[in-house]
Image (cartoon, rainbow, N blue to C red; front, top):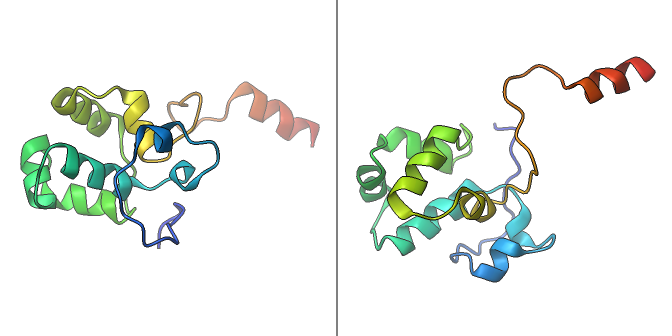
Length: 119
């Protein structure tokens, strides 16, 4: 089982521009399947195998991303950006990632350390 949020809805339609900008809507939940489905529609591909060939990724990587077994990493986002010419912000929006900043590594930030000390 994964620690990522799962989608309760059966709606698998591609995101519109309004969905990408959404404020707390269904599109705001982390769902890499939505990103992959949108890429398939945008690139006019039939399945995940065609998507993996187009992106130059192995089919198991696409499957693991779709089933939330691994997160969409920076290198995968960059590869998708290179192929589709969509901005990283749009790609992150399509999968429901609304973070303002990324933290590199697993070390806690100064703010987190300070909060922990304060109790």
